[in-house]
Length: 464
Image 1 (cartoon, helix red, strand yellow):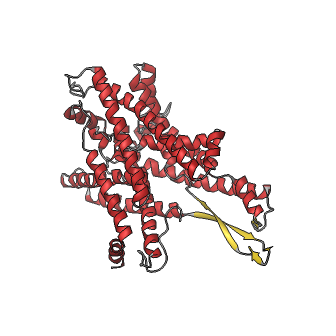
Image 2 (cartoon, rainbow, N blue to C red; image 1 turned 45 degrees about the vertical axis):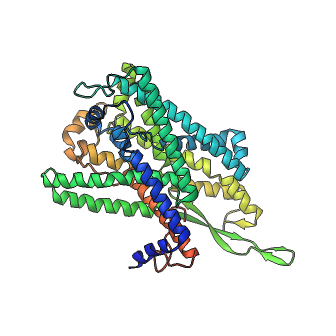
Image 3 (cartoon, helix red, strand yellow; image 1 turned 120 degrees about the vertical axis):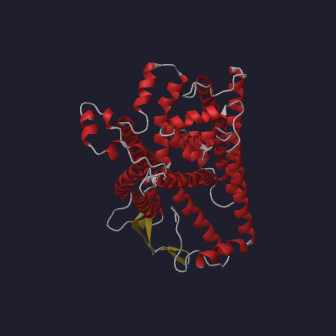
C-alpha cells in the first residue's frame, strides 16, 4: 500500500508529474525509432544473418540497443558513441592542460566540454557508421543472400547508411540531454535502461517457450530465477557498499564564531567506476573484430576468432581489461593528494594518521584494496552471461585444452543454453539506474513534504 501511495504522490505534484511524463514520452520516441529500419537494407537477409551470429558479440551488444541492432534501425549505434566520447574527454582532461583548466571554470567550462563531447560523438558515429556500412555491403547471409538490396550502388548505400546512423545517434544524444534537463534522472542512463528493459519480455517469453517445448526443465528454470534474484540482491548490496574513513575536524575560532569540532567520514565506494570499466574493456576487445571486418587480412581474422565470445583469450583479456580500467578510472576521478590537502586546510584529520602525505598514502592504500574487491565483483558479474549462454570454450587453451574439454562437465564447456541474461552487465546497469532514479524521485517527494517509498529510512542510490 505504501508503494502505491508513493506512486500516487508522484502524480499529485504538478512539477514532478510533468517531469515523469516528459521522460516517458521521450523514451517512447526512442523505442519507436528503434523499429525504423535503415534504408536500403534487406530486413529478412539481415535477420537470417543475425540469428546465425546471435550467440556471439552481436547478441551481447544487441542487449544494450534494445533490439535496434538486430533490426539495424536508425538508432542501431545507440548512445554508445556518446558514452565513448564522454570517457575520452574525461581521460583527456587529466593529460591535456587546456581541458583541465576548462573543467575548473564552473558552468562555462562544463558547457564547453559538453560541446566538445557532442563533436566527438558525431565524429565517432561517422567512423563507426562507415565501418558498418562497408561491412553490410560485403557481407552475405548464410543462405547466400546479400544484406543490401541489389538495386543500390555501393557509394549510394554507404553514404545513405552513414548519414542515417550518424543522424540517429545525434538525435538519441539530444533525447538524452532533454531528459536530463527537463525530465527525471540522467537521460543517457535512462535511454540505456529503456533499451535493456525492452528486451526482457522477449527473453522471458523465450524461456517460457523452452519450458513448454521441453527444451528446458522447469526445475532448472526455477533455480536460475532464484539465482537471478540473488545476483540482483548482490548488485544492490555492492553498489551501495562504502568504506567510510572517519574524519575529525578541529575547532577553529573565526571572529566570534567557532567552526569545526564535528566528526564525519570520507565515503569511498567499493565500485566507484560503475559499469564504465566493462564498457572500456568491451570496446578494446571489439577493435580487432572491427579491423577484421574492414580489412581482408587472414592475420586479423585469426585474431578476431580468438577474441570471439567464450574463447579463452577473450575471457582473459576481458578480465584483465576490467581490472585495469577499474584502477585507471579511479586514478582519474579521485586524487588522494588533493583530498588530504583539502582536509588539512580545513583542520580535518584521520584519527591515528598524520595530516598531509601520511593521510594521502593511507587513503590511497584503502582505495587500492576496495577497488580490487570492486574489480573482482565486476569480473564475476560480466562473465555470468557468457557462462550461461555458451560456457567457456576451453579447447583453445594450449596443451591442456583438449584434455579439459573431455573431462570437464558439459555445462562448463557448452553453457546452459539460457537465452535470458540472468545477471551480467545488463542487470548491473538496470539495477544501478533504477536505484538512482528512485532516489531522485523520493528526494523530490520528501522535499515537498510527501512520504517516500519507505516508512522508515530513505532509499539510497549508488552515490547516496
